[in-house]
Image (tube, rainbow, N blue to C red; front, side, top):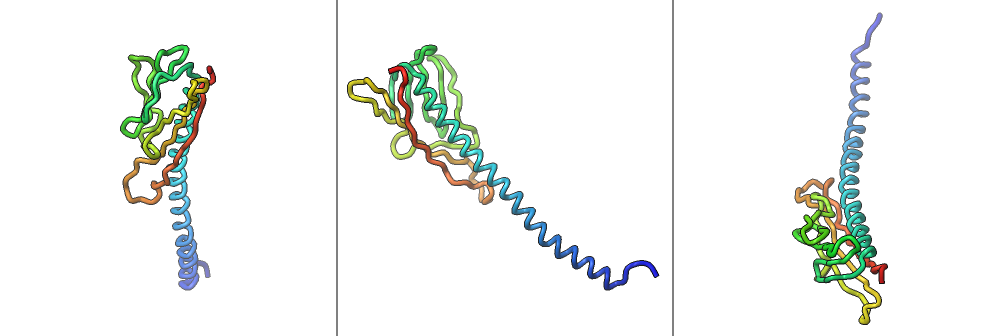
Length: 165
C-alpha cells in the first residue's frame, strides 16, 4: 500500500508548523536589525563627513574673515570668502560672495548646536595661531514610532588650526 497515513500527515504538518514558527520571527529580527543598522550608518557617516569637511576647509584657509556662534567665514587662495554656517538644521557651505549654499548633511539628518554655539575661536591673542573649535549634535529626522528607525544622536566635538599661519 502506498501513500501517507493520517498520523504521518498530521506529524509532518506539525513539524513544518514548528519550524516555520521559529524561522519567521528570526527572519523579522534580521530584517529589523538591518534597517536599524542602515539608519545608524546614515547618521554616523553624515557626522563623519561634515566634521571632516569643516576641518578640511579650516586647515586649507589662509585667514579668518569672521567667526560667530553659528558661522565661520574663511579666506582661501581661490575664494575671498568661504562661509560655513548652521541654518535650519543644516550645515551649509558657500564659496564666494555670490555662491549658492550647499548642504553638507543629508535631508535625512538634522544638526543642532551643543550648548550656545557651534564655532568657537581659540586663536591666540597675538593672532599667531588661528584655531577654531566646533561641536554639534547630528540626529535623524524620523519622527515616527517604529523602533527600527530610531537611532541615538551623535555629538561631534573637534577643532582645527589654519595651516597657513
